[in-house]
Structures are given as C-alpha cells and as structure tokens.
Image (tube, rainbow, N blue to C red; front, side):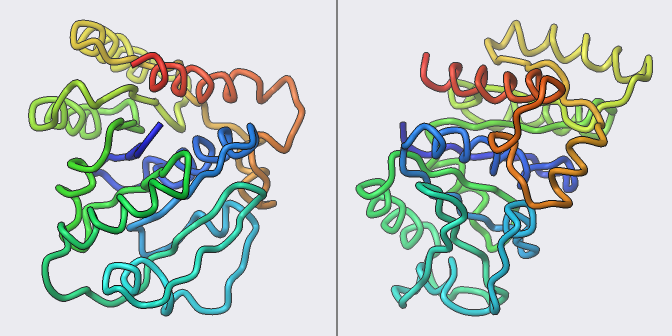
Length: 234
C-alpha cells in the first residue's frame, strides 16, 4: 500500500498519535509496518510505552548517511525509526528517496509522522502516495488545511481527521465549513475525535487503541478503519 504521510504544518494537532494508531491498525492485521518520524520529541515511543536509552544515535539521520541504524520494535509487525538531533549534510531528497525505496521492499506500509524539519517536508510529500491531515476545528488550523489543499497534489490527500474536539458551537461551524470544502474536493472528512479521558489514559499507559476492548473506543477505532478504506479504495 506504499507510503502514508501524516502531515499538518501546525504543531500539537496529534500527528504522532494518529500516525501511530494508523500504523498499529495494519500491524495488528499481520502486515509489516514501519513508522518513522521527523519529530525530535519522538513521542511515538512514549505513546507506545517503549523506552530506548539513547535517541541520539542509530536513527533517521544515520540511515540517510548510509550508516548503521536500528529499528525499534513497538509491537509485533510494528517498527519505529526515531529522529536524532543533528543535521544531515548534502542532498537529503535523494538520500531519503533511495532509502524509502529500499524500505518499501521490506515493509507492507511505511507511515511518516511528518514535521517540517530537516528540510525534508517537500520530499515527504513527493514520496507519499497518500496524505492524512489531522486538524483542530479552529481558524488557524483550518486556514492551514486550505493552504495545503492549494499547494499539494489534491489527489494524494485521502482524509482530514479533526482531533481533540470539544463540544463548542464554533467547532461545529468549522466542521460544517470543512465538510463543504472537502466534499467538493473529494477528500474524506472523518467524524471528530473528541477530547476524551479514555484517550488520555491510553497515552499515559502507553497503550494502543487496538489493545483495548471498550465500546467507548469503537467510534474512534472506526475513524482509522474508514481512513484506511479511503486509502485502499484509491
């Protein structure tokens, strides 16, 4: 199914958590998945309940420079490549594309938790077959999405996922506005993922959505099921 990029240039919208849940869904279906990040905080590790001693070595930057790197096994079939904290010299685009092509031979899916760092933002978009956009239902993030629709190949954008949503009238208005815009563009808009104590508890415990059976989580799980359906129905 190729490369899926989770992207929004605005920070704090939940890219890492959403990328992890997307990746884990396929891993729990016995498909081999690699999740890599350009987020220097490497939050995927915390969300998975995994600790590694040193994220300054053997990560994405070493891979790009052709050095030895290590993948962290988060769960069966689910692997993670962390970001280090120094900059790679030379042409990042060609290095990244070469390594992604190699990794595509080993993994069924590659999920990129994308942040606009390391001058890799454009190449992330280039290598991605599918783009998923988390968002808040507010003016700043909505404008960011509208700019993304203008500047990015619209055929790659599969879904927009409103995240950490409350119950305000303003959010409902932005949801209606986005639904109208995205429907006309042929982009799937999921139901909102609401602010929820149960999600906070999952994050605190390093537990994935797919490891818990609870009716309270069914609607949230269904968001990711439907997003994958949009990807696969391309």
